[in-house]
Image 1 (cartoon, helix red, strand yellow):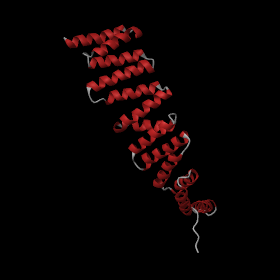
Image 2 (cartoon, one colour; image 1 turned 180 degrees about the horizontal axis):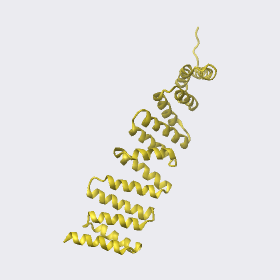
Image 3 (cartoon, helix red, strand yellow; image 1 turned 90 degrees about the vertical axis):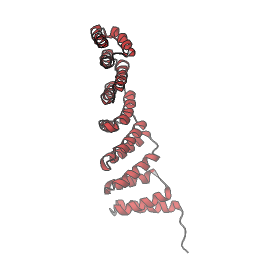
Image 4 (cartoon, one colour; image 1 turned 60 degrees about the vertical axis):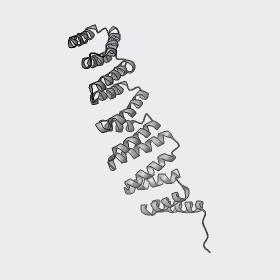
Length: 238
């Protein structure tokens, strides 16, 4: 009578078959089938998924590769390793599948695991150049830049928000936020004053902007610039 093999034995047999097919027979297709059967018995074992990752990469099966990378990320115990896997997934989603929105989600997850992942940050910066993805990408970049202390890049994010504002009111609020970043994070009160001056030119009746400008002028010593903007506001009101 035919015996019933234990799942662990079936797994081990398939692992051995996969190793022989890959290393001795140079038969990647057979190796893939064997490792897939082993995973069916053992579940998402990290070593087996790593073997499938290697083989799918070699044979160029991008969809299967993306699936196995995502599964590897799901069982990774090290945050840095998980971040690297999520970055690889994002690269496939963006470049191979033409799905930058999904790629952005994977990059967000990668940077949550490892905010210092330089390549994920660079990829996200490229996506942020797209107006349709900027809002979501900029939220992640802002958090990363704050954690890294990258004040110039943080200010650049807020500058871009000013440029993309859809109304005068929204633009004034974005300038107010940019001014706070320049003053508090970049330690650039003069730059903050310049931003508030631009906001005041657009909305001269905003009392809050006037108060902020009067607060900054003694810090920067640039009373001339503040007076010029205030004169423009007075002239505009008469």
